[in-house]
Length: 386
Figure 1 (cartoon, rainbow, N blue to C red):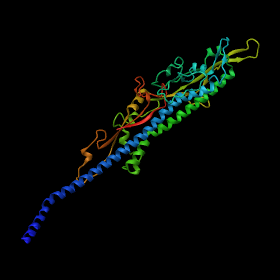
Figure 2 (figure 1 turned 180 degrees about the horizontal axis):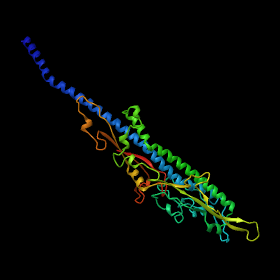
Figure 3 (figure 1 turned 90 degrees about the horizontal axis):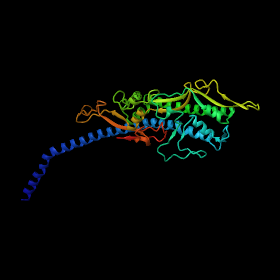
Figure 4 (figure 1 turned 45 degrees about the vertical axis):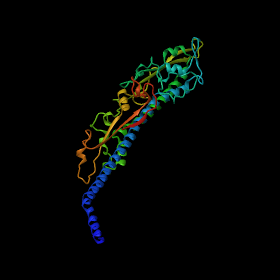
């Protein structure tokens, strides 16, 4: 009996071979499927990371330009002229009818020479605006109506009365002081114009071929040959592929980005004669100073501010779409995912990112996402959405 039991047990042990013929191949297929799925997912994740990084870096150029332009438009001239001409420390000028005094800061602002904070307090230092979502800095609306809103075209002022004829008559300001104000005024705005032109030139070159996007994508995706580095990421910048991408919404000077200038400047002041009566006469800069040919000026004139159209800023706030196509790797099952899964924008598998630069005034109905002008507020931030 013992011998018979051992014989039966041996026969039962062989029964495992039959189901193993099905189970083991199935397990092998599962392992291959898991491996191929992981490989495909890894490639997609790498592509998504590369596109997110590239889009964020490229949009950083826009954020920098908009914030720096907001500073040049508002905070810089306001603080510079307030420190130089406010009273105190500057002395006020007597009115010629001896009815009061006038501060040069107020006189120049009233002539439309520069913008100031609407809540500015005479004789007090500029307030901290770090916690303010809107910096209400503006020109005198009656003197510079062209800048009461966001210009849709270049607004050059043919002639700026830096010191008006009315102030020249009523304020006891000498000709020598007026010349000093003129020199300082043109020096400041020439410098601001140089700064703005330089930062626009850098931005224009970086977005000419969207080199930051391409280089970042090239380094992180590792799918382009080194000889193709300059063309890597063509899908992502969206040349002709879709209307809400980088290329179709590129900022261009004269189209949706404008720099505004003053062409000529004149001023009025009292010229002292040295005689007893009359001791002075009203002097006028005649002819007006030509700002297109002065040694420190731009050939376009004396810079005043730079603006971006509401429509361009609104699109930046809603975001640029980035659809980057990629090629799925071959797999053990010979399934061609490049034909099986195709994005409409790229005609092959793709990853997507929505990249924006947004400011606190995003929900302002009149000027959505416009913190450049009016109310220049340098608080744009780059945000990435899925």
